[in-house]
Image (cartoon, rainbow, N blue to C red):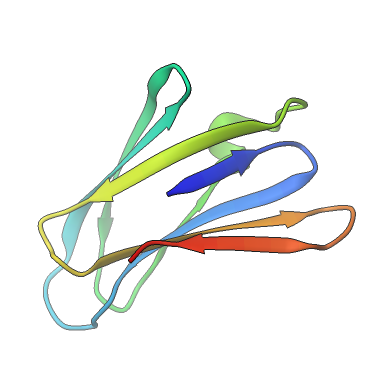
Length: 99
């Protein structure tokens, strides 16, 4: 999926399982920009919980509009992700989810 980073936007990435059954698992999230891989985060995700990752906290609040692409993986087949961006001035929002 894709996320953005800019001081005028609040950008978050949400990750959860599609079902509440099953065990907790380690989730590996890789972030890339136009030069390649720039960051890796590993967290434990429990059923019935979500990971909410604040993109601005990870990459800082940029004056330049930056695009980051991510992939998330774990051993469970039911991982789901959704990125969401809100313009702080206008309040307009946009989201993108995986299939």
